[in-house]
Image 1 (cartoon, one colour):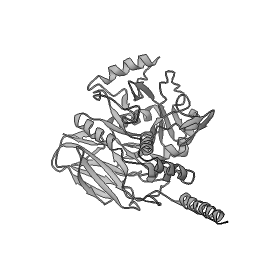
Image 2 (spheres, rainbow, N blue to C red):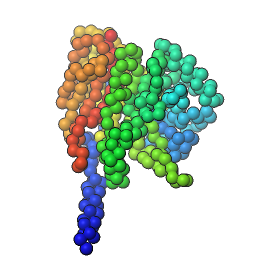
Image 3 (cartoon, rainbow, N blue to C red):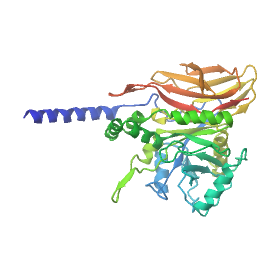
Length: 401
């Protein structure tokens, strides 16, 4: 009888705790249906590393597009692995979602994301792709107006880049969710399994508690930017598949969940018009210049965030290169005050040089160097986690010469 009471008590506690978790809101700002754009920049968010069932993913292109629409994305870049018969017919607008076809290619022991929005590389085989990538990656200072080459998950187990980083590399994935989840498993299997138990009740909380700062990637990013401009992207590597048991495929996490966790926010001087060709070009130019920031949208959509350098009567967006002059100021604004302790931090050449807990900030540019901005918050998570710093926003750098 006593054993039955104990077991019943445990199940009752888990039931009540599950209900509590289901109601728990991890967001530090509330999403707005029509959040404002600030200081002449229009904010468009999207996912840049997505697989369909043409290769690694579990969902059809139509299924993935519907999930992206449901997640409120503005653009979606499909990057199926080693797909040498790419179907470009889904490209264009699907209601308000702009869909573009990129590619993911195996190269040595790693994977390269190719954003060839303009010239559309025609590849017939993996061997041909290897030869082309070897050529493009060796071209120091090559014209990147036609395509972007991005190293996916540089430190993901089994895919780590070995040796010197090629001069023709345009960017790296600073955030890759699958890399982060794999590290969470390797560092603490108990904590990872607890997250899996939380997932049915609150998927966003489950992934937030697994999130850890991508320290190796950030260090590499700062190191590469000292040598040459290197853009940083956030990749969900959305597949809606973690494995299979026999013929049963585990669709975890779903595309919708993946798209809600982390995105890239492109900041444009003018609005997208709804014309696919010109809007695709605008998107490519912004990605190419690093005119965007990465965000953990799981904590809330930061649309309205902006960072720019004020130089007299001129403003320079994120990703700009400019000569240092007296009086230059880096201005940073948050859309709203987070409902958790927060801090806006300015980093130069990998070193923290200033911080503020104001929603509107002005940092004087005192020296040349690579300047980037992050915004950190301290959300309170349910027991057993409590409070900890989590970076919400990672902006691409300004290059001051």
